[in-house]
Amino acid sequence: MEGLKFLLVFVVLALASSFASASDPSPLQDFCVAIKETDGGLNTLGISLARIDFAPYGGLNPPHTHPRATEILVVVESTLYVGFVTSNLANGDNRLITKVLNPGDVFVFPVGLIHFQLNVGKTNAVALASLSSQNPGVITIAGGQEGSRLSSETIRDGQQQLEEHIY
Image 1: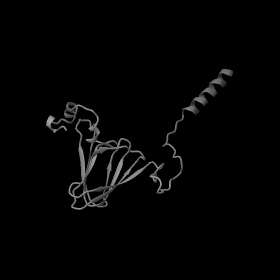
Image 2 (image 1 turned 90 degrees about the vertical axis):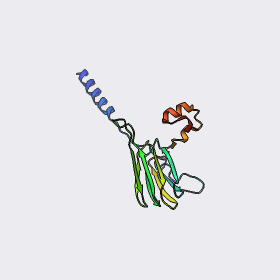
Image 3 (image 1 turned 135 degrees about the vertical axis):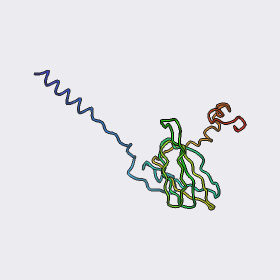
Image 4 (image 1 turned 60 degrees about the horizontal axis):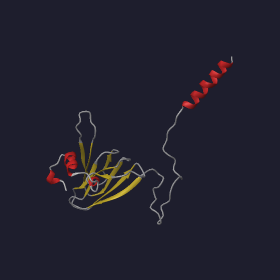
């Protein structure tokens, strides 16, 4: 009888301790009020917002990635050519997904994928980028090699370029 009670208590405790829950980390406060003295208007909300201004006729936000966030881009002024490169498809071919966006259009760049924006309009372009993390990170693809001390052979082979195209 003692053994049965022990087994019953053990089973109940095992079941009770096996339940798991997951959630985003709790912010330190419910909300922040933006003030002049700090840059933390969106702090603790788990998102970021950026305004991007492009020069006319080819203003470029060069290929880059955000390793910790999905980006939603809304065009406010002018026309942008935007796109991203897929990764790890079953057949090994990465696809370039592009679109020409006009004012009011929205485009989503999935987390971690290389993407870009190019102003193809005749006027300055303005876009708003919302990111799904308050610390999305940014890695500019070309700039990521600057100062990295990679040999020109490594860069050449990695980008499949000719030696004379490597700076």
